[in-house]
Image (tube, rainbow, N blue to C red; front, side, top):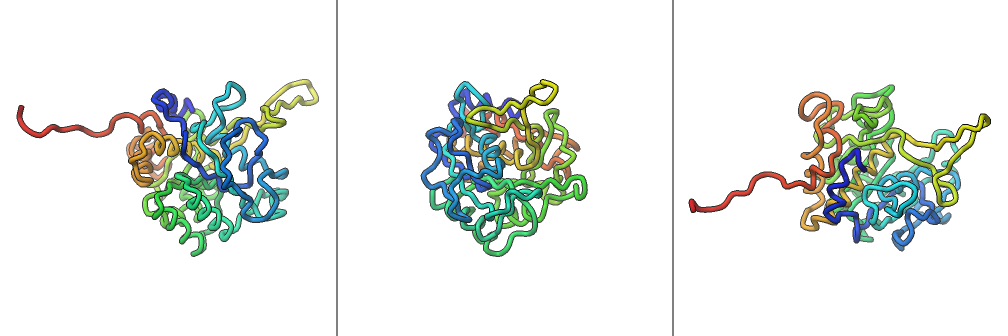
Length: 311
């Protein structure tokens, strides 16, 4: 949160209270104390009947932690630390143990988006990617935009082989989103684009960069997991990917939509894009897009005020 200048927003009282953030992903560890009392009753396993806890994947839990882990004096702290989390599990049954990770099918994602809209979510996080979305999913994103929901989607982790553009999934959703969608690229703790991150390319006007490298942490039994290796050295496990850049931005949108309830989703998206810290080439560029997420700048007064008359 400090890298993205969240503290000025917190000091104003922005913390996500009363706003539902939908995490469409591989489930959620509902026993984790970072989410106590803040899991929406509209959470569900959309792709099966397995419950929210996924023994084969921590991905959805880590995404939710990044966006909204509690400010409870222990563990990590998310951007929108008092938001309500609607966890919508969409991993296809049996796919998460695969070495390539979980698989998500467009009809399940579409169903989850419609459920998020029905539950009153103001922000949807999609930390996933791949091939172009089908027409069912495109229509679901368009419905969410019409309903006033902001969506953040990961740019993709193909930077080593295809660094010039966000993946087709992200671009397709952005085009369907009518100004309500941000594509999230990853930077490191120094603000340098991650080697694995897809870059802004032709989507630079809708591309925002955020921290996606070495994000803490894996939890075990409600606490940050500490591993001791065979030499006695202790370490914690951190994760990297544009999957973890996206919830930084989703958390920021959640703060904005709580603190400025008069803003539309498109206005909140535009505000984050306009107030990003410039990076790379001056102005909007094909690597960092609009720049790096700066929450404090988005909460600062914008523009100028004029008074009528000459007195």
